[in-house]
Amino acid sequence: MKEGPDIALVAALIGDPARANMLTALLGGAALTAGELARHAGITAQTASSHLARLRDGGLIAMRHQGRHRYFGLANPEVAQVLEGLIGLAARNGHARTRPGPRDPALRQARVCYDHLAGDMGVALLDGLVRQGVVTPDEPNLTDVGRARMAAFGIDLDALSQSRRPVCKACLDWSVRRSHLAGSLGAALLSRFHALGWSHRVAGTRIVAFSAVGREQFAAEFTQE
Image 1 (cartoon, rainbow, N blue to C red):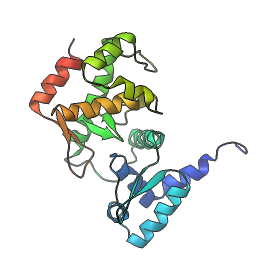
Image 2 (cartoon, helix red, strand yellow):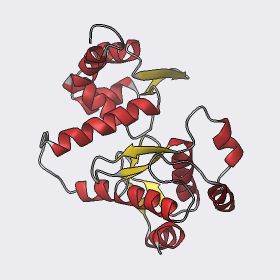
Image 3 (cartoon, rainbow, N blue to C red):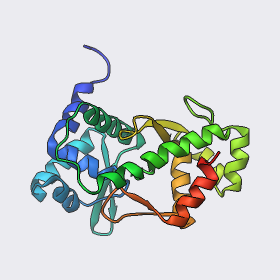
Image 4 (cartoon, rainbow, N blue to C red):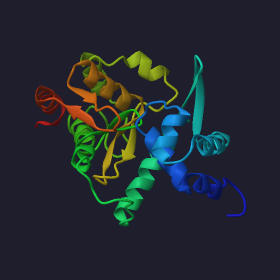
């Protein structure tokens, strides 16, 4: 395509192995320092700074200052969705960098995708919400029944409506190859699970660990017929 968006530029930014490792590290939703990202990428701090500058110029990451430190995160949820889609494409075509490790089953079960729940439990959540009439199928939208249900569950609907993001968005899950729930509702639900003590992030990973009680409550609320 000679005119229009330059996908080659974006692809080149993501395609460098060091930058790909940095972006993947940021899929966890946490802001990281240049030093932390350098360690994830296996490169020197000076090289990391050059890569981070290119990613910022390309609009894929954003930087914020806190005290003397600079923190980097993905520029927006759309970047996360593109990365998740590329991970799925690589997985389906057998392009693996390493052999599966012991964390893979946990990542496939439940993980964070930027700020919402992904993996088997993320897909089960969306399936349950559709089955219960909380959101519409296909491209999901929150229904009137869903608004009442989410308010009763402790979701701040006013905050959702004020967000610049879509309330509901389907995000293709790379491990299940079906959609999980993204958007401001997906983020709010994961935060609510954490607040209720059902789940927590495993430090240094994208894994979302549910307690035994949390799994039971999750199933009773969203997945049981």
